[in-house]
Length: 109
Image 1 (cartoon, rainbow, N blue to C red):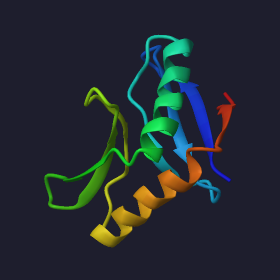
Image 2 (cartoon, rainbow, N blue to C red):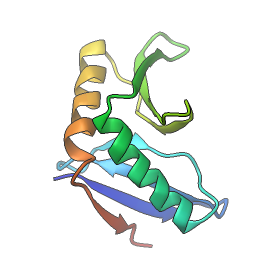
Image 3 (spheres, rainbow, N blue to C red):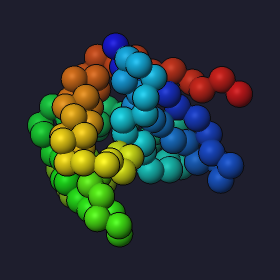
Image 4 (cartoon, helix red, strand yellow):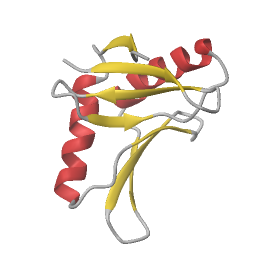
């Protein structure tokens, strides 16, 4: 089962990573000004992953990655850069599978 892991960055903003059951990060958030907005971001990932609001993109070196967008078009999460489109598609499938029931945890300091 997946989990959202929250932390405070060096910039003082709140971030989360969605991790698959194997512990691999499959989606990373932007920085949020408050804990409440970070929690809203997690709920937005749950809702928009189920609605299939993914966009596949290419990095500068031509490798695929994806972003998850909210209904307003704002990016709420970004994947790692993958070696192949197949791996990118598997990453999207993993977010869809893990996000709805993922638990929320605070990263240990």
